[in-house]
Image (cartoon, rainbow, N blue to C red):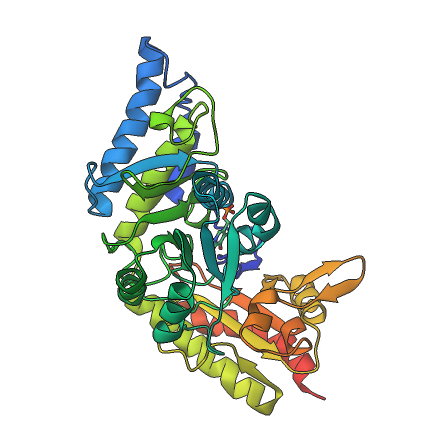
Length: 386
Ligand code: PLP
């Protein structure tokens, strides 16, 4: 995506620019301010925005209101914390399972969950980011008591996809409650709106597909033994108290309508594959694409390792060259720490410090590949000369 300041923004998995429909909505200046719980006319306008969005979301994802409750929140970090801790609160000695490739909003709860008397288990992934169904079932069935498993549908760092059909087979074989982190599915796989109604909860975050920040939603099966962690005025049927962000919620519908109308998965796949082929050709034996052999990868994510080069070094050069990308490794006080996601896939510490993630906008298309590649390879080439 080329920004108005002429920079190339290849970091869609971190966050998305505002959708055009959202910008137009804001520019119109119809600022809805009232509290949706207020009984007066202004309050009803705010309430209507939320109800219209909810109707749209139930229709889009083909879920029934009797089977699934829908609630809005400030984004996936809040929702994932709320669900995991809400499960721990509701059960003494429950089991929470997650993968080492899951987002830090999942992984970093371990200590707190353990303080809530919850047993926390990390499940293994294959080197290409997929999971071994039989092994996962065995690990989950090896524990007794109530169980909650987090699956990331589309991985934010590698693009590896965990298929919903396969996740459902894990559910059938274990009886565990399944939460799907669906944050990176929208506009990044072909069938992003085809949910599996046999799974128990799905979480989304609007800023990944063009809304204002700090608004997201979760579908949760009716009657799940998970307590709400956000207590207060009992809004949203007590699932998440607090005054709703009606305007933010309205931008969810606007951005999704726009995406549904304009997203062309085949075109995105062609463009990403063409870019990837050029990259593989340029890297030769000096690097590799992460999860390259995985048959189930998202359409927009390209994570690669450049051997012997710290990702921060290449990231800085790309930044100076006008290209925004991301590294999975964190840099604190001059020390680069390796990407925990790549480490859990079996990459060495050194290689896990050398990965660069490119993530393309859902409207990336073949006509842009050469321009993007030329801008990108001008900088990459400097690192391939040694
Ligand atoms: N889960 C995944 C897979 C993500 O990519 C992200 C954001 O990067 C999150 C959760 C957290 O989302 P939010 O920024 O809405 O808190």
